[in-house]
Length: 185
Image (cartoon, rainbow, N blue to C red; front, side, top):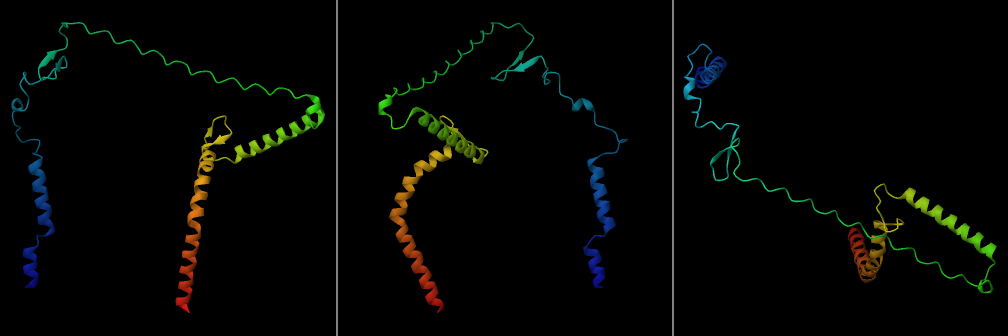
């Protein structure tokens, strides 16, 4: 008996499928069914907007093929090109030569030292460029990166902050660790 009440309360699979078929057939009438007159579905010729007509901002319809009443103004001339950037400043003049009697080393020793130091500077630059991140942005004359400039500017600020706060931070952390250890004992 309990099964009979359950069967009457829940529809069977066949009933569900029949219901779905009925809904689908109501939505899609069969091909042989008489169709509604198409005249009612097509708009009247007055409602059709032809491709030769354009709707104005005020809602009126204008014929595009009709001759225009006023000529369109000529397009404005293109803006003048921006002025070229100013030329880079000329390199500073070399320092005046020092008299031979005023130098501490002889000319051959000075040129050897200068070439050795130049070689060292080039080697350091090549290594720095090789170790620079792939997205490094070089500033100015190409020897300093933006990161180098930020580090240079932040270093004194960081030093001042650490001078003011580091002792207190260390004391607080040491005290916290001592308290933690003493609670375990």
